[in-house]
Length: 123
Image (cartoon, rainbow, N blue to C red; front, side, top):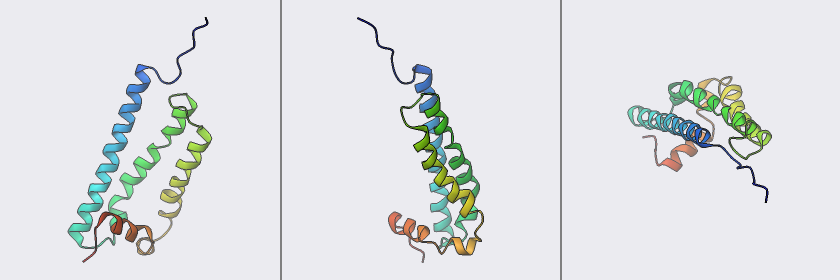
């Protein structure tokens, strides 16, 4: 009986993926805390993008590593589909939010929707 090759990451790969996911978790948790603290401190969400822009850009760009994870076989997912998913977020962060002046950004539906879903209302 031929032995089947073990699929998926080895121990070192699993450790790396756990570390990568933990760093992403910490980064996005930090961003959420920044948004919450900014909103409570200022009693509004105007200006919040400028407050969280750099951390969002860093952690969203870091997500490009997920495409590499697919390409090297750390995760059994299509690199193309992962690239489309990550790329669309990067277009929003770098292409749209960077090119639109901040007063127009805060008028978008996403910010009020965030407030509604998290229960943070401007007063």
